[in-house]
Amino acid sequence: MKETILQFGGGKFLRSFADFFVHEANQAGQEVGQVVVVQSTDSPRAQWLNAQQGKYQVLVRGLVEGGQVDEAREIASISRALVASQQWPEVLQVARSADLRWIVSNVTEAGYGLDAGDVIEAPRSFPAKLTAVLKARFDADLPGLPILPCELIAENGERLLELVLQQVAHWKLEDKFVDWLGGQCIWPNALVDRIVSSPPDDHPLLAADPLLAVAEPFALWAIEEFEGVDLFEHPAIKLVDDVEPYALRKVRILNGAHQALVCRALNRFATVREALADAETEAWLQQLLAAEIVPVVDARVEGASAFAQETMQRFANPFLDHKLSDIAVYHEQKIETRLMPTYREYKQHFGQEPVLLSEILKPFL
Image (cartoon, rainbow, N blue to C red; front, top):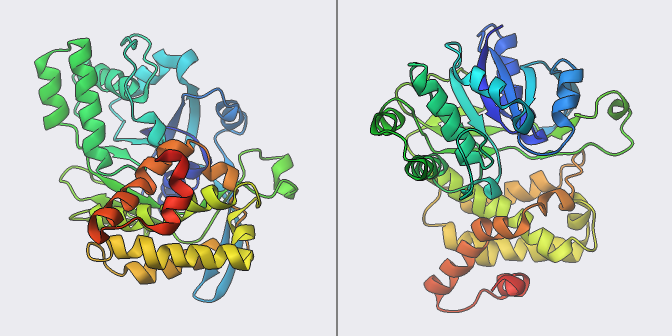
């Protein structure tokens, strides 16, 4: 099968989200193609993926319409993984392939920044890597591509294009390339929603598969509809006119609640579920959502209160051990996008400090 997707990031989220959907679409006969993963960290993940011929398992566990789902799925949509610092020429080779149809990324909020010392021959930051990849494709006289960012950043597609254009200006690349980026590449904003966690340390499948991940049944990939995205069909993929209401609701309520739990409970509980099994913490989070988060977004999104209650139910998934230590990675950057806007808007809208948010955000104010 052809390699049609170049993916920056090979963490458990993308493996249980975009790569999972590609696998299911391939299985359904759509022949979407395969994913080449680009790894930028020192993790052994690329080595594991290649040793396992790109295959790994995802445990889908949770409740669907009151019924229990608990199944292991083998995912086989990844062809290989490349380590950017060691295999950059191979990454550029994929960029120059006529088979390539999409670029996907999840480098977290921390990855959306430029490095003044970056050079095009050996880029370090994600925007520089993406710029170099697209320049290689442009130089090969190939058509542009849809770029599908999965980072939880407002207007992520527009923001990513801005960063690439800043990198282009810094490197003083030609105007024709700038025109190609804006005219032939597609930069839709997107919103991703699926809770993915590490498996229990004693899970029997871990011994043979260090890439094992756990995902809830629920999944949503909302992508702004643009001509030329030409994405495959999947029940989780929703093409929408405007992704902002979906993004605002999910980032402020679900991800905001996650980050608030890290602030409040990281030193006392290991997982989200454990924290919410504590009556005091559960009541505190319910109050935070109802009194300080939902009122700020309620007028701008549909069904904010219902989504908050659904979020609490998803957090209580008896099969999901979502570690607070995982959510705490890049905590400061996540606070800035997931909780601080709500704090500022609450003060502006209601003319007073949000009591619960003020308590947990004190170190960041």
